[in-house]
Length: 236
Image (cartoon, rainbow, N blue to C red; front, top):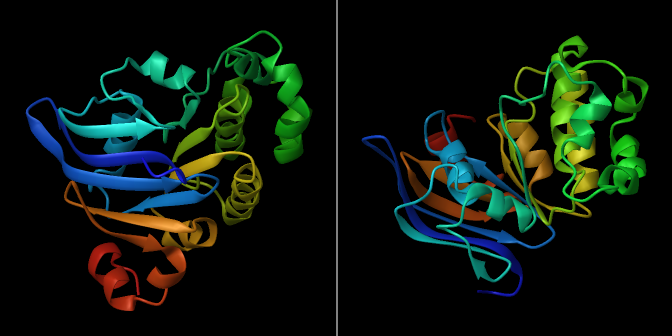
């Protein structure tokens, strides 16, 4: 594996039930960067994240994380290696307080205490809402909590699925700033349907079309390639 890549996904094929969802996806994630997976709805972006985590294990291909081949490992084993996941459905425990939601994400006793300054620096609202239950939070506050929870343990890589979905523009801007800041300490793979948001955040991109990775490179180059943007993303 190239030393500068924290994650390398090589030609993976993933089936869900009888459906062959991923039919050859390759993703290189440079260490210390944000890489975004782009593509239309149903292209296979979320399945790629789930394949990395072992939630939808690939039948073919390889997944290398920090020099270790991880496909075939159980999800909890993969997570314990230092991969955090923020799903698009947020998965906040609705009957637990903000503090309890954060504490339940500890891998080692004291994780939250060690990370609290960093987490509440990113999401100051959560400190103010620390005693509220998950079902008392707005959608934007739940999204912040979902990301914050993935930061409690020491993760080298964060997989974040559709963080801006359903958020008001002012909260999207807050989310962008938070992800930019956390990326200074953690490598990020981002699935984001909003191309404007993705282009502001990511240095690298991979376009997935009908279960195949079709194009990748630097976001700065993609922004100059209006033909590719129109062809695969439907955005001018």
